[in-house]
Length: 168
Length: 168
DNA sequence: CTATCCAGTTGCGACCTGCAACCGGTTGCA
DNA sequence: TGCAACCGGTTGCAGGTCGCAACTGGATAG
Image (cartoon, rainbow over all chains, first blue to last red; front, side):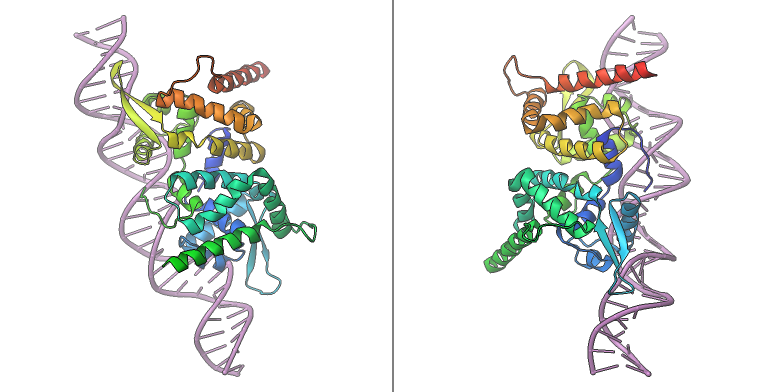
């Protein structure tokens, strides 16, 4: 997957960055699913990414500085993948893409509640979320009583999951 | 390029839709460049898309109902490609993606003024733009004195182009 | 009548995708 | 101590996609 720079258009450069099946999906899992290890990304992926593809994508995302990688202090073999400021700022893009997808694509209820909350929350929620992500991934310090958007999104997802389970 | 539906997640489904190098770029040219014919899309593309790829993408975008196609009344061989409501609603996605790209990727000044205006204009400008696109592509009737965002974007681009030319 | 334009199509090599099997090293547990 | 499970990947392979260049048959303009 070469880095080309065919033109300086922001949309074109964005597609040279994300114009493939998996890059954004991997970032989504790190961002919204808080998956930080290779194995988590591999096996807990809703879509079943192949291990070689995941390895190649992570390598590429590292080169593009959209993720960073460090050793896990508690396990010699584990690597921890983190978002960078560059990828944290994709939150509004995810929000808009999710809003569009929710409206125009055959999404499932459970997997789209997060997108719904992100859409309804608007820029204020996105900022709170990005702030939280900076705490988690960049080690930024935050107020002890700071809002956890991630927990809210996760709770809403699990509520839907339970509701869907009941309906069966 | 198969249509898979590996999961009902809006981000995943969006990537199944746009997860390739060219789909969004083609839509960008139709939307912002007002390119309506195959040849315009082929030869005036800043990035130089290949004709077979363009043909395949247009076919796919037709299947996905992201563009529509009709005969040109003034020329028996020409086909006119138009946006649909579904693709017109991608305007906010383009705006956010453009904003992110402008901040984090090596964009050129000329090709990113449009993105800058779209970003600064916010949701109000996006709505005006989408309304104009509905007039152009869906044949919706609009007020005679309605604002032309397309013309504003184009004018700003040409201003930058001239300024860049002078600097050489 | 001829040059040009029209929307694509074809052939080809290189690269990418997806799957399954596998690797050497580490860890947790009996 | 022994061993199964887990760790982050790698390898091989078949099939599909990408990108380029050359080309097609029909329509149009002068």
